[in-house]
Length: 122
Image (cartoon, rainbow, N blue to C red):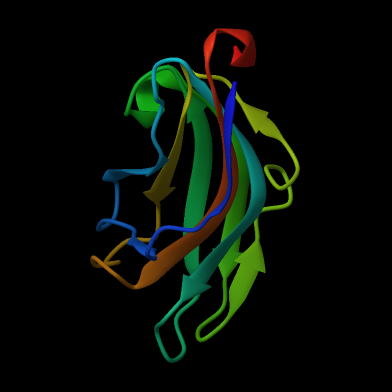
């Protein structure tokens, strides 16, 4: 088994309203342990809502909603439903902004995780 810890990719800009954004993509033969996940609203005053899904592919339509947050302007939230949880090799974490009129990059996600790979990691 190989273990890579403290992986923290660049912030991910969530797409415009009603468009799915992959926040953590499945990797064949690997599973993940999420150590941190926050979503930031970069707008000055508008509250924006985002739904978080656990999905077998990169669409929310195939997924199960596991969280929904409305984030005030210039604020952030921690996605407590996922912090400390494992994500199987076949699963994706998807974000979908639901606030009408929201545009690309008004919400950003920062995630950190440990990746376990190898035949005994599944």
